[in-house]
Image (tube, rainbow over all chains, first blue to last red):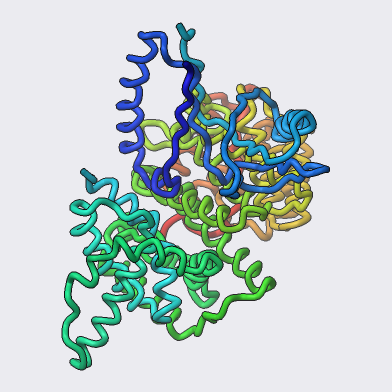
Length: 122
Length: 439
């Protein structure tokens, strides 16, 4: 069975960490990741950039672009894509194609800060 | 168990909201600050034992408010001291309290707190010191260190600034749309000032002042979270991120400036660049250009160039042209001339800066750039005179050393025409001619 682990924290607090604190956490996490990689159990890992860099596409007809992260709480996170795009407009085009295939709800488009492709899963 | 580093980070991040709300209650900066301090002391005692509250800011506001009210009562000797249990038993109340903290106040509380630091009567240095003390919560000692002055002098400066703010009668009513956007412009300028205090440092001050850049970025992100649809705030944040991304490459081990062309681009922070580029993409969709967005777009063109020769100088020339329209200044024209020298050659660039001579007659960068153009044209004698003038006007030993390097090259190469190509660093647009980087 594949599981996704979604990471939540107060980005204000994480943003207030010193570089040393941030690096200390990352080093500890790397140890956990390495163990999983050796066991062939770790897929892609991404650290996202702050929500201030996010754009949201509400899947209305026509879809509506809103600055900032997806803020509603009455809908739930059901999945995610990782895509490679030159610009935000390219990413929005992809999101619009997806929206046409699957209307309703919203897509939050958030740039990825660090991406680790991970190993092949057993 | 909660470790103190986590508590520090939580207190720092909750500070603008908590002090902003306490200021709204008490309408007095000192009372609000003291109330927040008291709340922090209680947090340091309570959080390691009871665990952190779900909403630290709400906790701090309520505890801080109670503590300040108690203080008033105690002074009046009208009421008995409150029982500690009343204050510490907050866990049940917390959820309802968080709901009571009206979400709509949140934005204006923080904006007001930032805004009172930007009172037009306050000189820039006092604005920055006040913001770093009140909004960021840096200690007087830390701020004094960043400004290279004694702690006593900084304490005095902050006290004086607070006095002026208290006399200024800042409106505590919820601002209207027009006033809110006016405040936003002033606050953005103040955040960029903080950034430039860090960015324009050289020599020994680089390491000491770097936290100012980081703090400005934190404040810019905070402001953007409050106003997520403002393209100029996206531009401001992007500009700070893209400039700061080069921090590790901008100075050699002796603290001397390394020019853009000579920087080791592998040292540029790609995460900050990615965030900056994403923000510019967002801003552009609004089609409402402004000075921060244009400057960020220029910084982005440098950031996108893997090698100096990949730089799109033609586009940079156009962007400086646009900046000249929205924010005319001889410093902007001077920067544009650097781009023009790359696109159309030093002759055209020299023609462009000639009319600026009067207004920039005391500006270090003017003579540095002029000398470089003259050198490229093989007019070495005139270049030497310009460089001499630049050294006389240098704001730091690093700036002077950099020009001396050009002079040495001139002397070494004698009159041989066109063998040397002076490299030119654009002047910081945010600074004004004649302004020294520290007091």
